Structure formats: C-alpha cells, structure tokens
Image (tube, rainbow, N blue to C red; front, side):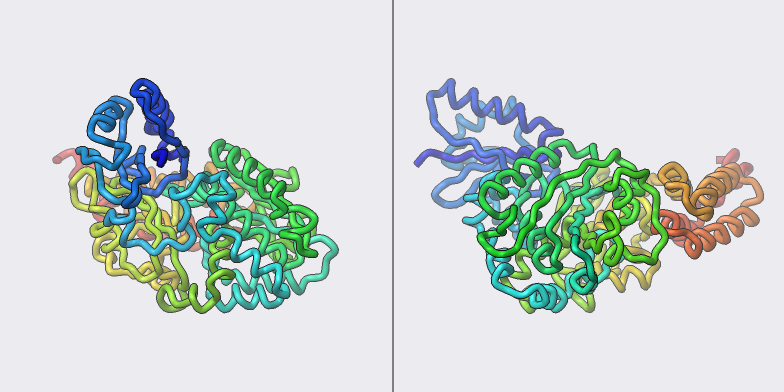
Amino acid sequence: MTPTIFIPCDAAALAVGADKVAAAIANELSARGLEATIVRNGSRGLHWLEPLVEVRTGHGRIAYGPVRPADVPGLFDAGFLSGGDHPLCHGRTKEMPYLKGQTRLTFARCGVTDPLSLEDYRHYQGLKGLEKAVTMTPADIVREVTDSGLRGRGGAGFPTGIKWNTVLGAPGAQKYIVCNADEGDSGTFADRMIMEGDPFVLIEGMAIAGIATGATRGYIYTRSEYPHAVAIMRKAIEIARRAGILGPSVLGSAHAFDMEVRVGAGAYVCGEETSLLNSLEGKRGVVRAKPPLPALEGLFGCPTVVNNVMSLASVPVILDRGAAFYRDFGVGRSHGTIPIQLAGNIKHGGLYETAFGLTLGELIHDIGGGTASGRPVKAVQVGGPLGAYFPPALFDTVFDYEAFAARGGLIGHAGIVVFDDTADMLKQARFAMEFCAVESCGKCTPCRLGAVRGTEVLDKIAKGESPEANIALLEDLCNTMKLGSLCALGGFAPYPVESALTHFPDDFDKNPFLQAAE
C-alpha cells in the first residue's frame, strides 16, 4: 500500500513553514526513490506542534511535530513512512492527550480530510444532514434546530432556531442566508480553521439553513486578511455546485440554493450583523438602528438569517444525529459543544472543542499547560478585545453563557487570551478604549466620543493626575457607553475597562511619587 503523508495547508501551519516542509518531504521521496501520496489537510489545532505531519499506517495515523525542513532526512532514516520512532514522534494522533480529551462534533473532519475532496467528506459522514433535510418540511428542520438548543457561537448566544423561525415566517419573495465569517476578535481562529480545513461542512450548513427558511441565496462574508480561506471556500463552492449540492436543485430536490464568498476590507465593526449587511450591499460599514431586525428586513431589505460560521457548521451534525443527541452535551442553557481557542501567553495554544461545562482553570492549566513564559497567570480575556479580564480568583467560572454573564463577562467567539504577571492591566484597559475609538463606525455619540474620552482619561490616570476623580469619571463614562451605544462595539468596550478596575486596582494606582521611589 502506498503510504499517505498529511501536511497541513492551514494558515497557522503555513506561517511556520508547512510549505517548505512539504517541499522537503517531496524532495526526499524523490531522492530515495520512494513513493508516497502527499495530502494537504487542515490543521488539527495543536498550534504549538505545527507543522504537525502525519503518516497513515496499518495501525492508524502517526504524528510528528513540529517538523522543520532540516528534520526531514532524519525522519526518513527513522522509518517515518511506516511510523518509526523519532524524537518528534507523538505516537497515534488520536491518542494524543490534547485531542483525546476533546468532543469533536463541528471539527470532526478538520485536520483529518483533504479539504477539497468531496469523496473524503462523504466518507467521514458528510452530507448526511443535508440528505435528511431535503426530505423534511422547512418547519420540521427549524424545530429540530430549535430543540437542539443551538445558540449563536459568535456573540450573545441568541437561539439559532428562533432566528430561523422568524425568517421562515416572514413574507418575502427573496430571502437570504448570510454567514458572518468576519472573524476579527483577538485570539480567535476557529472560523478560519473550518473554512480552510473543512469547507463543505459550512456549505452544507448554509444549504440546510436555506431549505429551512425558504432562502435561495447565501453569502459568506469574510475579511481580506484570510486569503487562504477565501481561495479554499471558493474552490469548494465550485466543487459543490458541480456535484449538485448547490444550484437550482439541491441534491436533486425541489429546493434551490446557491452561494458565494464576499470579502470585506477588515473593519472590525463589520462583525456586527447590520454593519456587515451594509458592507455586503456596497455601502459603508455603519451600524443600523434596530428595529427592523435583519430577520425581517435584512440584506437588500429582505428577510435574512445572519449566523456565525460555528453556528452554521454545527447544523449538519444536528440534522444527522438528531436534536436530542446534540442537546445532551453541555450544561444549563448552553447546549452542544464549543470550539475554544487558547491563545496569548500559553504553553499549548490551539483549538479545543468540548462540551460546555469546563472551568476556566481547567482550560488554562490542565489543557493549555499554563503560560508559555512559565510565570504565573495574571489574567485571561475571554470573548475578544471587548471581553472582560478574569483574574485567577474567578478561574472556577464554568464555560457557560449564563455563568460568564453573572460575573460580568461574555463568551463571544470563545477566544481565550492569557496574560502572565508582567501584564499592566491599566495599559490593557487603555488598549480596549483606543481600539474602540479606532474601530468605531462613528454613528452613535457614546461610542464615537466616549471611547476617545475614555482613552484620554486613562492617560491621565496613568500620569497620576487626580486618580480618584478620573476613575469615577471613567466609571461614569463606561456606564454611558454600555447603556447608550447602538451596538456591541461601544456597549462592550467598557467590559475590559471595568473588569480591570475591579480585579486589578493596584495597576491603576499610578502615584508618581511612589513610582519615583521605586
């Protein structure tokens, strides 16, 4: 049997030399007169081991990493093609502790298959959900998604089924499915990994959403910073169209659905659904006032489902395995699995898909291995640049929408950024305000002016100017932004600021006389 070698084409692996490793392996095969099939797969999400190269053997895939071009001759000398032992060998891939502890539903194929092989996709249970969907009524599909408990995986956790049901019941000759793939939060990369590693699952999820709501057209809106994801998604859409998965007759049914990729210019505010819709229409990415809701008057004034990549990519397994199967994972009102992204100053950074219910401490210490620097963890930020900072005292917080909200935080897109004890939380709070000031669309006064004034006040605190008065002013300003901003950009910018003030007050004590004495 001809050996098969898997080398990631994921952007994270490319950034650390995966293409050079692939070329070195191809050259080594040629020089030694050996034959092997090289497959460029997605990433498994173990980023500290990238490029993670795998070889398929009679006893499963064997993983090696991180592999550099200079390591390749030694790998072949050690019997690499038959899974031979080597210092870079981690044994059977699926037995690696980081992977073995996961519950991979959405990411079941990511890093396993050739992203552009429809044969691979079908072999690993792909299209099962869509095949069921074409035999069901739209109302039954919506009910299945509703009963699963699936909630939005990109923001406030709004129930997906309720949004779909609203669009299903809305009058309109044309309806749309819009996938929000404008992944702009710090420490997040799950959307990119799916688009680069398993694009057909997103296509399948969007097609099911179209059948469920009566939408016949879909758009994936992503950012220009994701060129590899854009290229792979466009190729996958063409393949799906040729195979009859997309087009005037989805899988030979009476349902029509087609889609395309649109690329934005990288404005953070276009991650907000109404700004995204404006951008899709060719307008400036500015927040719209609500009502009307996009579900009633969205893209081009038509009823529109706007869902995150992870929400749509979760739908195929729900239709395939059933609502009860999916709902049984998780805790409280947080059902199913969540792809948690570990980033920042962390030893084992990467993607970890698991059921809701683990604590922050388990994720950071047991799974992430603590800080990469070896120093104590000082804070973690969950939910992107507008997420709250949690100190170790709150590491017993369960990863659950309601548990985070109860402690002044938000899960958002489930990115966790870790900071060690050298971080200055006043500087981090200032970054949040400055970020909001730069990225604001400018439509509402609390966000447009509040973030600018907040940055100025934090600069005064940093200089030791009237700290008590300025902290009181900052708190009042944060309250105004939270209650008065049109969208989450201005409304959530106070979260990191207030949490830094609450949990790290010593970092705001910038008495110039004490600093001079130090």
